[in-house]
Length: 324
Image (cartoon, rainbow, N blue to C red; front, side, top):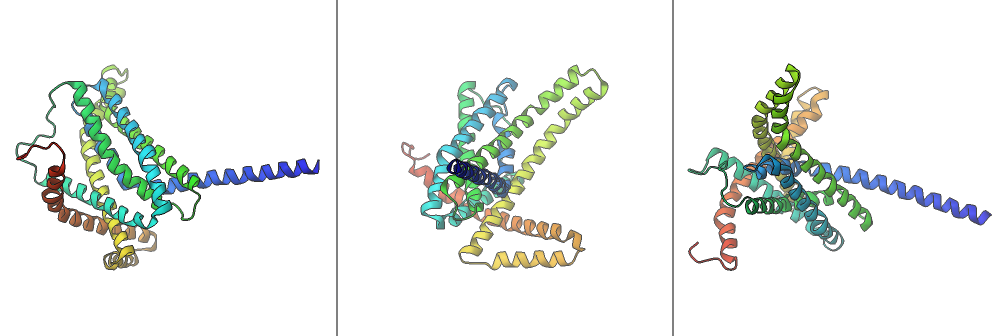
């Protein structure tokens, strides 16, 4: 009997440890996911454009296909790569984060540049022509490729936020929770956004109360401005997060002067305001200066990528006709 009681006590102890481990994994996943907020916001801001030009009946299926592609990117390709990186080459995490941060800065700066200098004759809202099924497949493929880059940055940021020295299974579970949770939040939000105007039209048409119909008309009128604001917020978040990642990476690798200067300016600004507002002011100054750095760095990268790297990649593609 004493042996049985000892065994039950051991089982209870193991159960407590397992429960604590699950709590740890969930908490770490939440913290790691929060670290990737900027890339997540940009992901949510970018995706709605891929359903533009398709019938309302195809909007949710397209979002669903992109979401499944995103889950596949994260769980099948990126999660194993992140675990291998953590196990065998942890020193590569910071350079890869800086590479991803550079991409975010470049993408954000490119959006700002195109907004200030729209290409002559380029109409991004022009309806596509051709077979709808083929166009849908192309849109989904393009969206999943874009998602792969953003997902790689999200997973790398999440990996860097996890405590060192954890068992592989805890890292895997935390990253899997980040992958599934972020995908659900992003594409659930995208689904709500792309269908909001349809809901508004339905309320305006069939609402029994005047207030309900007015709400529907309000939703329809607000959505175009909301979409523009979402794109602006997404671009700003991309530039801010990219600049912050690059600055932190520089400070860790070789050159801490820019990071230290921003830190000192943020502290000085915090000391200049009442204590209750000091934390907010410090964050705003840090984020603003990180964003300014990210925009400037991204603008420097524009000619490097557009006139150097992209033509080189295009030239190396097999089967590319000469002169094109």
